Image (cartoon, rainbow, N blue to C red; front, side, top):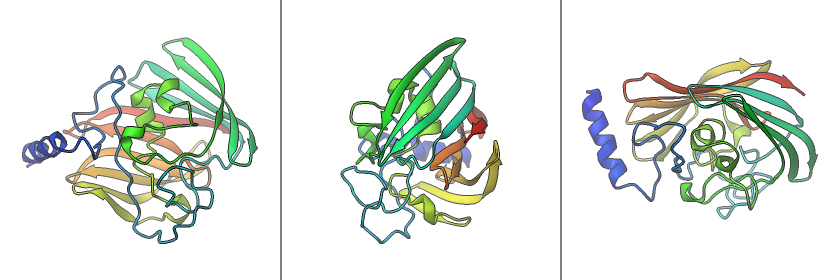
Length: 239
């Protein structure tokens, strides 16, 4: 049954370049910078088209709180497994309206790089627009496509108002690509909702998203056999 499902997935992916299934060809490795991620999905419950801080992208359809927002200052440190990038630090020092000043630290196999950036809320219209942190910078420019998949899957959550999410919620990105809030968890003292991403009923990603901090606190991707490929986890938070 799994082999048949895999054939369905590959057939659909071959004709879905305009849709953008993340992980279509087995999730790859951290040297592959090809953009992945879904299109602009929704949770099916957001009927309010008034934009209230949910990003300033072209679709303009998200109200409330999204992954594009930065609601809190604080230092978030993540550990990454099975990738050359081993540690990722997101230190939000200042928030001024929609803009946030962030110190980013990337530890790649012992080589540490630090950069200060300005983040603004942008919701991309589609997966082909990448995962922008501001008008000139993409998350993949700081890290790589795989870390971007794990920590900032903005395309998968593009039309989701995080403030409305609760256990049991489901939404469909497109035929065969579905999301479900399956439970709760916590990392470094922060609570989060577990969201499973399935392609033809096969688990491809599992996220734990903080609806208060508008951030993925942990994330893992899996191959077609269900084996873990990569994982990112919040190990410390200093607010």
